[in-house]
Image (tube, one colour):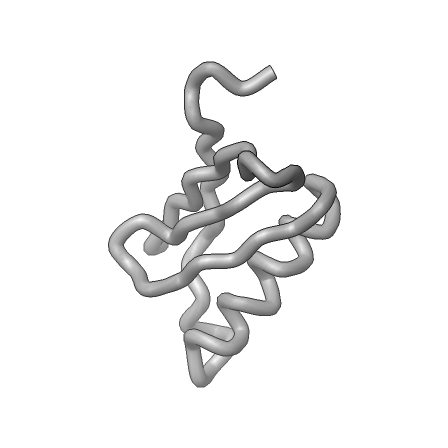
Length: 65
C-alpha cells in the first residue's frame, strides 16, 4: 500500500501547518484535531477517487513542544 507522509509544523502565528511530502497538498488548522480533519479534506480534494488515497503517515518536525 502506498503512503503519504505529512510533515506537521507549528505555525508562527498559532496553530499548525501540514505538507504532504511529494504531493502538492498543504493545509492548516488551529488544533491538532482540526488539522487532521483538514488533511482528510485536502486528500479528498486531491484524489478523484477516495480508494486512491494512500495511507497517511504523520511526522512532526523536531523541536515541537
